[in-house]
Length: 447
Image (cartoon, rainbow, N blue to C red; front, side):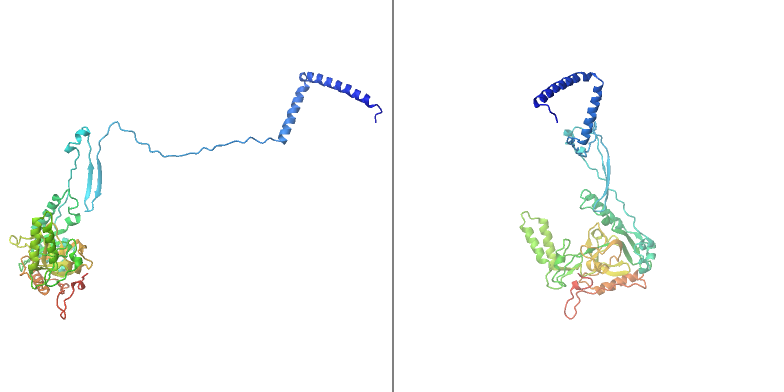
């Protein structure tokens, strides 16, 4: 413990402080110029680094922007040509009527558009139609490739074919077909389809060497004829049939009425006549036609497509019976062969001059029950028609038993049928059974 008085210690401390301050100033002045200064700087840096490593400052926040990449597909147009270059383009297609159409698009350099617009030759279509006319089948081998049973059904057919010849009716048919095609060449909706163009395989004029019986053989398909009306046998006509687009109350085969029952379609035709007369611009030809048809319906009866078995020939075939021994007529007896079936019929109607192969709905449904006015029984050329020319009798109400007997007689004159085959026997829809008429809608494949 110090024994010096407080005042004395204060003075000494003050003097000491002054001396220390003086020495420090001298040191600061001289220190930068001494080697020790470098050492101090290094020590300072080391101290700072140690402090910073123990107490690091937080890094400054950084904003990172991610670039959004958008890919857009751009169709690069081809370079513009220095001048339009004409070219030819060829295309192939098939139309609904089975025509293979090959088109060629031609271009060439022309005059300015103001001139070409008024030139008829600058914008045209040139149509060239190519059609091959078929070669008719003439041998038994060719016919049996279509129906293998034909030789067995008609044992003497091969003999008749030896001296047979292709009929001019074959050429006439394809001549009419070509005329039709040329007439409607620019009307593709009216032109024949490929199916309807090739609907006739052959027409042969045959004669049996022993009996001299002539027969016209036609090979083709079969469409459906549902026409006809007869107030005597069927006073009430099926409305569904009568309203068909293609239905007609007439057939080429007709006879004088036997009762006072009016034709079931007479009221409808009389209304047609009244409407034709009341039209703003009446057609004289239409009025006359309707009047003739009404008179015919009052006087005659006709075959019924749903009840009577008959075949149809082209209208162009009529009128040759006086010029050719093989010329068919309405009412001639005929036989229709399909597969192993043989049907007795007559020629009951005439159809378009450019189509071959049609049978009544009754006949069609016997061949194929699914047949209808809109569905043919046979689409292939597998139907054989044997027409016995100039064989018709006096027209009258159908007698199916008589038709069967007459056709059987003519078949015998050309050698008859093979042992395993027989002629179909038709039942009469209108035969009386205990005083009641049979409804044709309920018999033999009726609807």
